[in-house]
Image 1 (cartoon, rainbow, N blue to C red):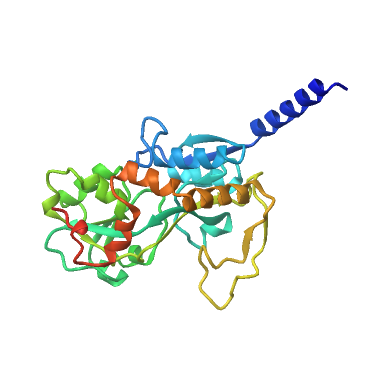
Image 2 (cartoon, helix red, strand yellow):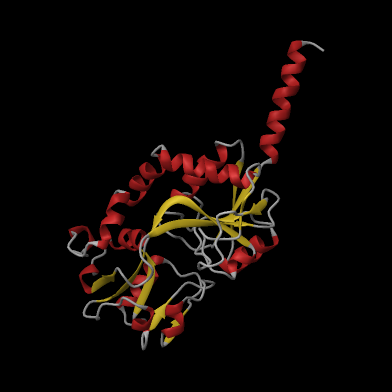
Length: 287
């Protein structure tokens, strides 16, 4: 066998392996600017996950469906992962949660003049706006009612609050701040920074039935502690594509790529998110 033939076979084999490794990201059909557009898949999520997939020799495929259908597909393994998903014990039955390198700080948005909301009990008597298919949390149990409009966008969520159709909307600070950056009525709105869990890491949810997934026992798991994304009985098996994908995301975080594209899309540095815990920080105002 000639050297040229050997080289051709090797390159062909590598090409076939790369083509065979397709990571499918599922997301709801509505926009979540600037993470993803409604009419196409462009945005921060695509840039981040496409780069992470490409760096390990995989392709990224995106499927847009209503969120409940996406989660069902993740549950049966036909979709590999959801790009930003909140941990719950119920979801953890079919999803393993791992950090994606982005920060997460859920806050409340209300009209001005509302007493500060700090605990789930403070949602009592209030109408809460939430996305269809979102998980039940303590605040939803205390709320007077929860509205789940189909295909809720951030722009329409702000209008729900402004028009008095709901009392409070909860979402990530970065996406709410982005939506309100140039909003003409932002002086009629206020943030509630301590309402909903504090600063943490944004996690992706990877299907435990994906062909790219393997798990092993997590020796760091403590049964005495509350179940969470970072205290779970299982973890990714190191030879799995899912683990390689996670490692690729952590590499992008550590080399500054994630922070760079975050700043490009949101218009402010990640450090501002961390500064939100100081009420005197001018970056938190809606002025």
